[in-house]
Length: 313
Image 1: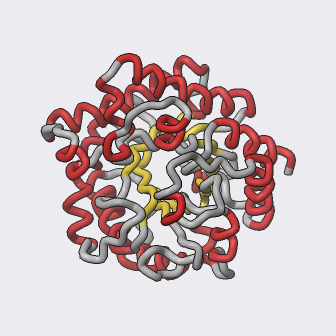
Image 2 (image 1 turned 90 degrees about the vertical axis):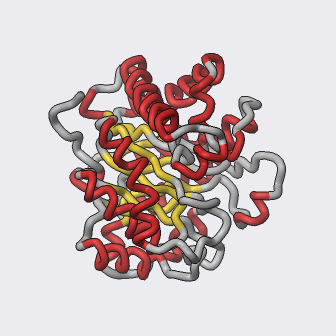
């Protein structure tokens, strides 16, 4: 295990790449079955594990080629208690799957030739429920208790940061930040925006970030936005010092709303070149942003174009 913590994105101006829409790629591009949208479940099969490794190698190779750092993320998005129960995992077996995912990241990093200083191992957390469905009953205290289990496993696995993706409320985010602080780990919180440029519970991005910071004594290392298209992200980035807390974008390839994508039945890859230009526009408008990857519908082709566009500016 590393004795020195890696430099995180909010502590430097260098660019960090991360992966794309893991589940949508594995389902639609590789024909793999992901019950309950759970990609970690594939690590129980040797052939499927190689598909997952190849997926991450493709992104890591882009980071090596472009001279950026890389954040290994996303595989444990649904490796928390409720989803593990649905898949028949005992608490011990679920913890083992989380640790296997972290070891896969490290193996891919070695195979890709990434320098240790260019590697961030992230323990990825998804919402307790489905990201596309509101969960108004989950309080900050309930979220803290629920997510503490997975975060403690990440602590045992020596992660560099806990990253929570696709959150739709400040309450769940507060619980995750508190749980990460209890474990002695930094956390990155990523909110998902709807077509009205707000979170699913109606909060503005500014209100959500300021609420989390106030409730946790600015406990999160930084914030991000994911599972939303840049056309819905940029309008949410209103003026104010709070914007400096937003360091990353993991956008959807499609401009369509979540309810449409949820029933589409096939992959909407959007226009990768147009998406890359929109990322470059965001980087130009907000130079402090330095974490870039993709979400639903994106893969390494999108991230390669995004990285190239960022380097041009």
